[in-house]
Amino acid sequence: MAVIARWKDGNGKEFDGFVDGGQCYALNDGMNVQDLLEQGLAIALKLAARTIEAGKGVGLDEVYLLPPLQPRTIRDFVAFEEHVEGVRKSIDGADGVVQQWHEAPTFYFGNPHTVRGTGEVIGIPAGCQELDFELEVAAVIGAVSGSTGENLDADMARRHIFGYMVFNDWSARDLQRREMKVSLGPCKGKDFASTLGPWIVTANEFESRHDTEGFLPLDMTVSVNGQQVGRDLLSHMGWPFAELVAYASADSVVKPGDVLGSGTCGSGCLAELWGRNGSMTPPPLQPGDTVQMHVEGIGTVSNTVGVRRDATTRVPSTVRPRLARSERTSR
Image (tube, rainbow, N blue to C red; front, side):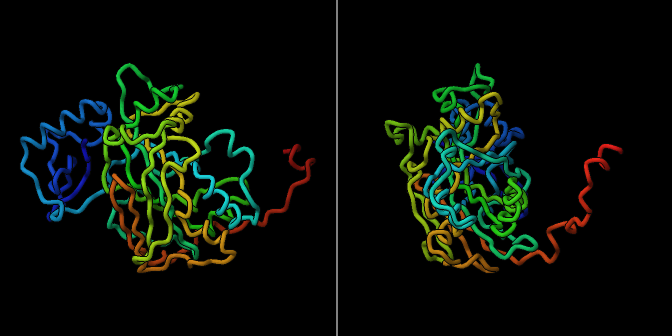
């Protein structure tokens, strides 16, 4: 097992390395987390053992944890049927899930440039009145010798999973709702912040915990201001992570540093509860609220909500008249 993290000390200096026994051990020779991902899991585990044995650790309570990596890409799936049912009810009042959800795992690309770490304050986007969280687990891709990461089957895809993190996919529900009326999105409803952390726990730690279908029965909980709001098992996904990775690689490629989210677990966000309750109960997040997420075997992330940005989120609405076909073709 290796726990891989990034942190900064009291002087603001940043480090990449390993956490073991409540101590942080920095990588030497200018190496960073991305280097570990590109070398693959087996080499990273050997390097972790050597670094921890030879190094002098710094107490975990003396450092400030950073996001454990800068993702190359973020693909976020919607793999929990219970969540899809509740959110669909919240957004358009419909029951159940569409048949297409069952046919293949669906994902969108997130914003790798706005990843936050545990402990960071998350500001409310301009124009948002319905800030929400989403409790997820994320897998990060590592290199596998002899594989390009293209068109993987599930067995090879599983070998590409380097490790796991807790993932909070922050959501501006009112902005998202407007965008998805145009059959696009979630766009500005999602791209302002995602929390990853508190570290990467390497995949070998979970090998013995997969069930016969490849799912991981890890307990997942989320609380707001100390009050538990949601709880589920990661094994309630519609597809195991290996199949998500395989699907992402189909006619495409996954590379070291790519992050794939499970999607929100059942009862893992407010919007799902709004749909089931028929009202905004519990209420949207407000400045000063603290959201804490815990996933068994991985760890805990916690963020406090900051103030709303004082600006508009949209360009002015268009008022241009619709051109007749004759006018369009004559130009």
